[in-house]
Length: 282
Image (cartoon, rainbow, N blue to C red; front, side):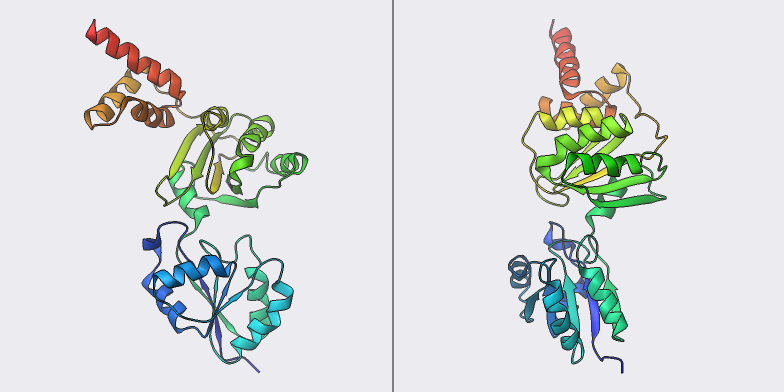
């Protein structure tokens, strides 16, 4: 006999709390139970919005022990499933709960909202008409290389998650296995220090090797046959710098921003800027 409860898959902010929807807040308030990947993380979100729904953990290492309890809760009321950030069910055990709930006769309803995969993809400047989601890239170099090799002839855009401390190694693997393809490295999306680097894989590695890499990383990689990024002429770079400086940007900030757009290295853009300024002052 079908259960009475609905399993809601509730997308939560990936950084900026303003991105949560009114519907998501209502469902979180009205559900009889919230199943969370990390209750400590989710409790902060609930406290911020003054939500007092009972909370239980559901993550990779306790999914088998908690599954029956959550299904039992669905027999008497609605359950909201949330991940630490974004849309549950992607690269977490949420899909197993979805399958079990459906098998038990429960309705499963998504509450759409933030997703780092989609956010990075649409802002990448790479084709979005079709893409392949690779999930979290393997930690081991050999396994990561094997996965990239399996996608070497894939014409669609590739999207993956990576840890900040492995970013440089992964960019090196991308260049080695896939070639110097265009990539977008999205870091700390929707947060205060959001950064999206767009350019060839080699330039991305040079860019991030010059500083400490922090925060969540979403990688977008051009598919097989992607054209190399358009490299701007020097005159176009000068014009872009002039616009940035007229708008009040500091020289180094302007150089970094224009480098991301132009396919130039930041240091070469800054050198062009200083040489241009010296020529004008002479």
